[in-house]
Image (cartoon, rainbow, N blue to C red; front, top):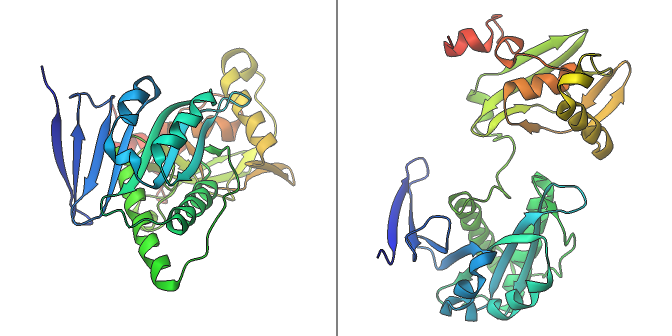
Length: 294
């Protein structure tokens, strides 16, 4: 029986080595993650294995934690972000919260995280998660903490490491919808319909429509019979302020991620569309031609 597996991954771009340990030999079970030359440590696991997570000696320390699940009212991804001087004790208290199905915790191996440090980290995690808006943050306000400048710099470095490790642990809570550093070198695409002009690009998770892109106001008549999910998405975007009326069109107020170019195009057009032919580059080539699709 496999008791544990260790994976070491080099993130070439930033020169980072990540050590991921699977105590049960299963990537869907309990995991720990560490970065070389970092004093912190991440531990994560599904709610079904909470007892195994609580048994870890690291959780007797102070740290921050993230509970992940689905908001029952909206069906959207939801997160609760907290801090505790003894993480184990606080997680036990959260058994009463029904929404969450996964927990991720961050502690310090050298035990140098004070109450002020973890309160600062909690506040910054909530702030960044709300800014990125991939998840509904169920505790919108934190206790917060003011730190001396040197401590604040140290905690921002700690936060950077959390941001690096979260995707490795299967969580995109703090992954920007659009990487502004990389976006300048990626292919910018344009889609047009009935005077509405939208811009976007391929991403690792699908397709992003840029803020200030336009969409038509009316749904296609045929959409009611074939693409009700698209109509529901358009209505939800109108309710949450992602799409707002502007003249005879709708405007995207934020960068918005979709699972595919076709889904992005359908929301813009108000009905089914082939994303491989809808999106074109500055030379007029569509995605099918650009990517060499058959």
